[in-house]
Length: 115
Length: 114
Image (cartoon, rainbow over all chains, first blue to last red; front, top):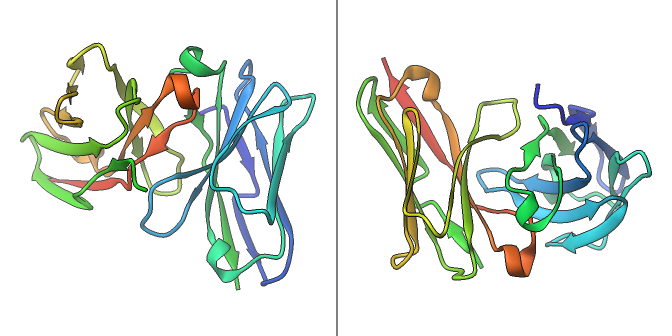
């Protein structure tokens, strides 16, 4: 157990629908990152939050949004889902940012299947 | 633009032999490199890292080598064990320009045969 908790583990939904993925960071970690891993690809960075504020944005689609709440948990919202959104979505956390965040700790991921 | 590339999708070695996983990068601003290991149905777990000011870092059976001039790093596992069978991801960070976010390669599936 890495200490990073992601729910749900599996999710099957239909095109056009909206889903919310949830992440609780490791205790003491202030920064949360979301990554997407599509079939046979590496992890693609989506977005980062630090202590409730958006810190960095990667290749995140406009149909996707995220936020980090005061208790530091984070949610990734995916809307108007398409078949190509089927992927593993990983959340990671770190204590700080920049040089003070040497290692990201990952959750087990949420597998989204869009039919 | 794939800034971190692992050209070998898979590698198979015999138990007890050396496993060498390779990674190339293009961004000269990368200053910190990490290897993560991933088992099925689990998230990636940190294995070993190296700062750009070093050329080698060792932790038990795992050694990471960095060749900055060639923009290449490698992970050596000696001796390899069946439990090492997993997907290995190379990752890099450009602290000054991108903060703490990591850029990952595509991964290499390592299979260690008994």
